[in-house]
Length: 478
Image (tube, rainbow, N blue to C red; front, side, top):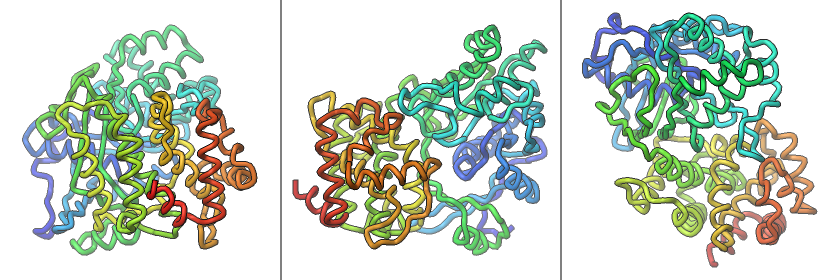
């Protein structure tokens, strides 16, 4: 390897499995795998190496690509002061991807595996947006309840492995979500136990009483891999089809609640606390909510990259005003954290030109992200008697984006699992804005609030009649 690349500072042949990670995408390789790589380099916990896993067809392609390079990942930190590349060696295997998930179940049944972690995206937990609870009627969940021995979901595979361990008298593993969800441990527990209850209530009760589901907050901006990222790897002399790029910043906050032990992650900067919910709410509302605030005006104005959106004076001012007026005042105090300083950090991270994150990625999957990242802040404002004009304008911008064209008339390619439905409703809302808020599975009682309806109607009508620039100018003059 070229001297400019940092290599694993430990003997990988001495690593042994301790973690199975489901959903081995860019974020995991830039986050959890990096923390473990750092820990192994300190000479600690070499029995906690990662076995990758997946339940989708795309995961099989990732497996083949990583196996061809001995499961090493290239991680390039995009610091404006200079790029840094390293090879991460924390993963030692990748379970074969199969329709019945038998190889994955076998890997998780191994007594050496003590943690099963997941990054399956915010929409992968079968949560009903209207209730915020596990949806036992989802098609894949019903399929797994009927055929628990041949599961199609990650949660079905987890249950099959837990049952195999239960019957063999083997201690259960911890199930640890690494996705951006409020109370991600609770959400994961509800999905696993909710599925179990559909076919075996006694086993569901055993899971509830014996398996740990720690809550956690994870944070690192990690763009998707494309030609630019592969070219960056080539600049370091690496022919890697799946390199990962990321910002220098990273954070991981966890509850210290594990069924069968854990690696000493506190040695490499992970915060263990009973107050994960506070860190989590701060991050989800200020950072993830902030992403949505800049995404939809950026998309409507045909801005391609996030740092370009932040360089737009109107969009930067829009973000600042909505955050300071509608979001930060409703974020509970966080231990050892100044919220004003945290917001300034977020703004500087968004503006990093080296990341080259795309506005389109931030616009993705609004039907899952809006109820988690925007609506909780909106709900808190209303409960206090305040109408949050900026957040309601953000909802109107999302609606206008989903209509399928930008302000210039350019066609917006589908960008949501529910795109067809959203586009139909958004186009009908041009004549009757209440139709957008009537999507009860997304807005619930918020969509029926007359204060929200009045404000949303005003902003959406203005977006259609005068365009995004003019509407942002009106809002910023308030």
